[in-house]
Image 1 (cartoon, rainbow, N blue to C red):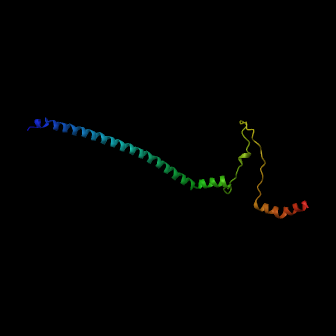
Image 2: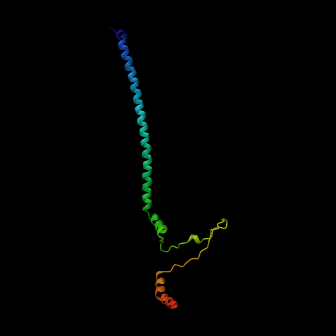
Image 3: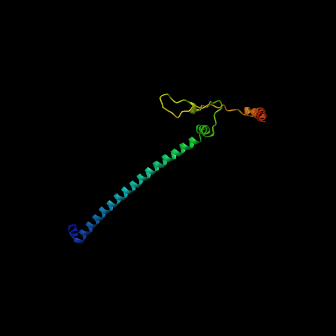
Length: 135
C-alpha cells in the first residue's frame, strides 16, 4: 500500500480533517487564553500603579505631619501659640480695600492683653480699692 492509497481511505481522510480542525480550535483557545491573561495583567498593573501612588501620597502625608513646618502651623492655628519674638497681626482689624464694597466691615478696638505680673498686680493692689469703693 502506497501513501496515496493510504490517504485515499475515507476514514483516514476524515481523521486527518478532524485532527486539523482540533489543532485550529486548540490554537484559537490558546490565543483567547493569552489575550485574557494579558488583560488581567494590564488590570493588575493599573491597580498596582494606583496603589503605588496612594502609598507615595500616604508617605508624603506622613512626612508632612512629622515635619517641623506642620507642627508649627498646627500650634499657631489651633493652639494659638507663636514663635518667640514673632509679632501676630489680627487680620480682622485690617480695613478692606477701597475697591471692594464690603458693608460687613466693623472696626473693633484692640484690647491689650495683660501679662501675668499685671494680672497679679490687679489682684493685690486694685482689688482692695474696688472693694472699698463698692462699700
